[in-house]
Image 1 (cartoon, rainbow, N blue to C red):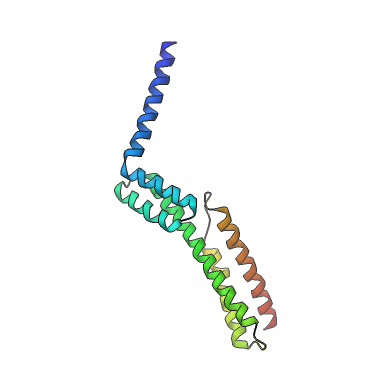
Image 2 (tube, rainbow, N blue to C red):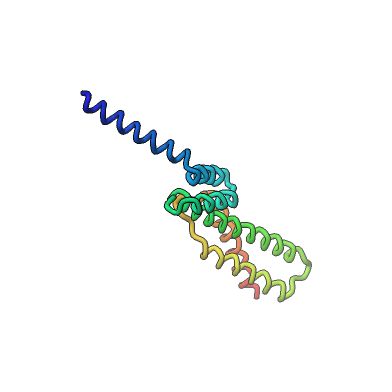
Length: 153
């Protein structure tokens, strides 16, 4: 009985020592802060903190993982922002009474850029599902736009 109690107590103390080390270590402290900002969707702040944590300790796998995930999330955010910008420009062009061939070519080019941009980004297992869904939604919208423009030219 005392043998099992000894191992249980020893395991608990070891786990406690690991937790205290991670909390007291500045690199892991910044990693936990980066993880917090990542969960809030503030990927730029998360990336900055993860880079700082990784600079303090190159073996901090938590920092390197958060850094990679933040980069992926920022790529998705940039893609979505570009898609929104292009969509608003296309909406302005469509509102014209007479759409010129140059306007059609411009819309076609913008749709191709957004469609090809989607291919360049790839999610990981922990990438925010809402970001992935929103990016896929915009890709589908631009595929439809591209098909309509291609058929009218």
